[in-house]
Every structure is written in C-alpha cells, then in structure tokens.
Length: 123
Image (cartoon, rainbow, N blue to C red; front, side):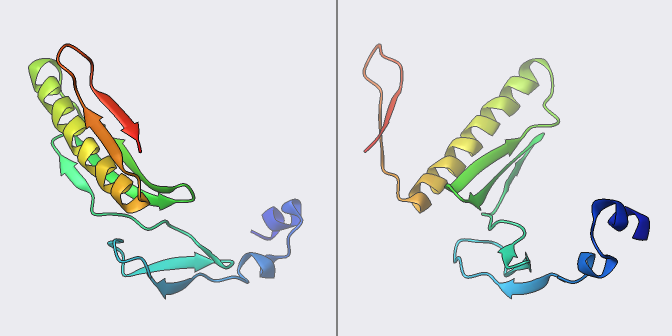
C-alpha cells in the first residue's frame, strides 16, 4: 500500500484520513434511512423502492438532474417468454419514470389520436 500511495504522490495517512460517516437521509421518498458521506459529499444517491420482475429490475436514483429511472434486464428469455418479460419491463419502467417525473415536478400531457402514434409533451 505504501508503494502505491508513494507512486500516486499521496501520504499513506491521507488515504485513511477521511473516514466515511453515516448521516440520516432528509428526502422523504428515499428508501434508505441514512447515507454514507465522504469528504463532505453523499457517496450513494437517494433511491426509490425498486421493482423486481422476472429477469429485470427497475429502480430510480436522485441524481444532479433529478430523479431518474433505470432498468437492468440481465436475464430475459427468448421467444414469446422474452416478449412477455420485455412488456412487463416496459410497463414497470414507465410507472417508475412517471413517479420520477412527478417527484421532479414535471407535468406531462399524453394522448393518442385515432390513427396516430402516441404523443407525449412536457407542459
């Protein structure tokens, strides 16, 4: 460890100087009771309750630009079962993104005219 810190130009004491501390979360929507803070910054972002489905997980984090939905689809099946899973993933992601939009204060207008593709616009 000493040779690594010497190569990087740090003293070994500096590497361990700033131990993380746990602070209570102040965001009501966050599922975490407390967060790790290092060097005056929150280490992991606030997050909403994740949605776990068959072969996927949908979650949301509070980043600099606001609440943002994410999806991890690591185990989708092939053929018809995969299509069913993909539809469930899309629905779960849409619900999570709608919750993020609500928390971010974004109001959306959604409608579909007969014979037209779906329309969505921020108001």
